[in-house]
Image (cartoon, rainbow, N blue to C red; front, side, top):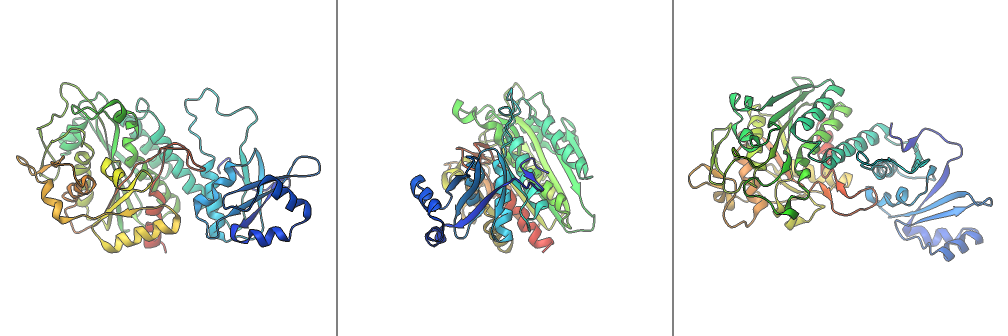
Length: 462
């Protein structure tokens, strides 16, 4: 159980939840001293505002929190962010779904990446602790918060401590904790077992490339395969990035972190599926044997890739992994990747781009994203651009000329390796909060993880 929750505490400070739309009527019915306190402190019932009220002894005795009329998860996040250390309990009526969101926001707010800090917290600091609300789905809240924080931890860890071996170790730990099958193909064994594109991208680093493989669930259950881009650091290769462009490239394994987070939630919930997770893990580095612009790289599929730009390496490693995923003809394939700057230009940093070859599956993902407040935005697999992915001297190019519609052409490139009529979704994600917000600290972030899990839950365990 997470440290920010507790079963019971008779001394817990009550937190009264007030719909912002009801505030004027509510405050009118309060005692004069409370009305005066609200007026003198500027507490007007604006959604997201907190009022701390002292008792006769000067100690904190009560908290008021004004919330949106139809709140989502992040509408609750300002509450724990504004509270001093102590134990709190929710007072009054609230919908179970709202209590779940409140508790999840509380758990999200408690996250801090402290691995490299010499002191975890100021002495005697506990942070705000919440007494579990009644009717709250505790298991679901804890699983979701822990999966989210796993994603954040993996992304936030510098590449010096989160290269392909460490990412593989994290996947192995996750598999072991859920009694899942785990295997890895490493180094030149990738060539022997026909994963040449993964090898080509990762061979320039002394930490060998590898393909991580997790399997879990009954063998006769519906198959679902998750694929995550695991570029543990991206220099750009010989087409080297600028200093600014390289600064956040420890997050280029964000896709891998995302699918491991979803896998944790799926296994925690014991969804009735046969889950497979594939993570091609590499570093895109520079050395004498680095992949060059103009090289032609073979793939597991047999199609060849002309390297127009060594900094478009993510789609190259995903080519092998997606073809392997499709080879088993699963019911669904979902891949996550920090794939293109073009998606960020189109949609900004908070909104992942969803590409999907199945309208029914896409609708389910979008409905799930709305239900859990984890947004996705569908973009087109526009067939008119497909010819741009064709290579001049090879079957495909990893860097179409012109650069227009770059998120779309990247998705179309990946679609060439989903060779069976399989429902497939590709999610191009930032995986990073560029600024601090309540419940969402600056740094690595899980985006679309809750949406995909909810879509899987609704489909296979309604």
